[in-house]
Length: 99
Image (cartoon, rainbow, N blue to C red; front, side):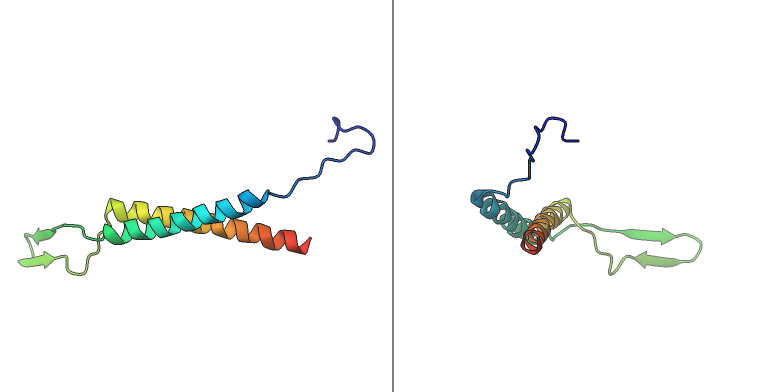
């Protein structure tokens, strides 16, 4: 550790540039908004399900079954990733203020 440093030289991590500190959270916020819009617009899923149990003479209709479309899943995934990036950046900001 530190084999490449000369005597008395220490490489300390540099803080992120001002552009990075603004761009990354802005992109994460845009990802959250776009993910929510995509998830909201892809709510409808046409799905029919009817099961017949031949021994019980009862017809089962799947009322109350909720299916999530692939578009909604993608939108929610993008939203969660954006929220994770925002949480990470917030944690970095709090950690830098305390040290």
